[in-house]
Length: 77
Image 1 (cartoon, one colour):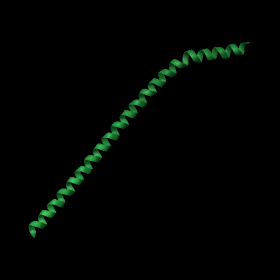
Image 2 (image 1 turned 60 degrees about the horizontal axis):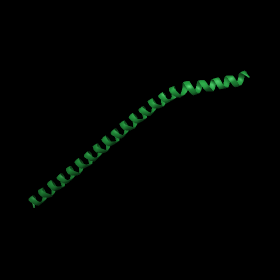
Image 3 (image 1 turned 180 degrees about the horizontal axis):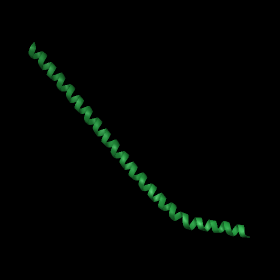
């Protein structure tokens, strides 16, 4: 008779004590996951913007160099 009482008591303890702690832990974990995801998204956006800016700058520099070379060659001729 004591074993079912103990298991019932253990079940009652688990159902009354742990869900509050676990829900709190899950809330904290969810908040941490959201913060990490937001940080990762921000970092990815920043990296993409930097890469786009670098590519645009490189393209502009190449175009300017080509135009200068063409103008110099044409003027020399």
